[in-house]
Image 1 (tube, one colour):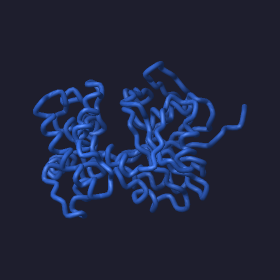
Image 2 (tube, helix red, strand yellow; image 1 turned 90 degrees about the vertical axis):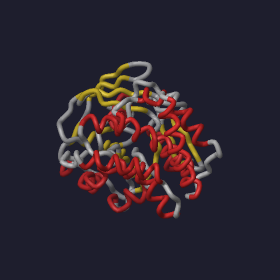
Image 3 (cartoon, rainbow, N blue to C red; image 1 turned 60 degrees about the vertical axis):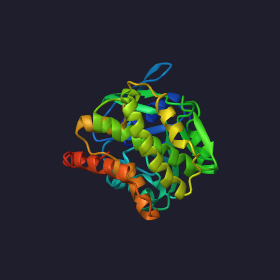
Image 4 (cartoon, one colour; image 1 turned 120 degrees about the horizontal axis):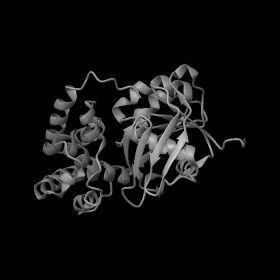
Length: 306
């Protein structure tokens, strides 16, 4: 057997982690291990052009982990603290940690947990859905699946994914892209979770009016935070949202169905926090945050380990 190009550990084996892990194993270039609660021997990935079944090497105990070239952190943002035992074992001075999470503060969230390792922020655009413990669905939601900074770490991450179906976007204005993704999440996740409907709900005229108001409020905060957002950015984001498949769900939607906590503080909460820091009012986003917190509190007994 040829020597693997890189050693990779995938921490967080939900919809996002399952899709990227399955794609990497399917490409056959790397030594991939997934860090999970329950043993797993195989994974089926339904992709736009095909369905693959791949063997999976799984670890269930951080004590058995060793430093790797790459960690792909795919948990929800609010689950990050629970990954500390894994990160302590997997990260060394040469390790890069690619953060496949929502939000705009990847580096601040990860740096205290990874020692001398390097954070590689990403923006995930693809839609993943976990259909069973060993089956995920990969939907492409635009011209790119993942965005990275146009720097050596970002290009190294793109090379890691070579041979997979993942399409990469390089950007020299990553902060603006992160805010654009946050704008989409500011409406897609809360509205689907609160209405318990998939993205078909955005075909309603009244929901579109609400979304535009939420987006305009959030865009004002993003501009004040340094993002280069166009005057009609809210309208562009709503138009983009309407291109997504009506049957697609969101992470908050699936979390509510399963009775799990939401990653609301990394999404709507990030907008409200930035507004407070910049002295800008965010009444609509704050209202959504309050409602989501109220629902999430009811699910607080659910384990948030990866």
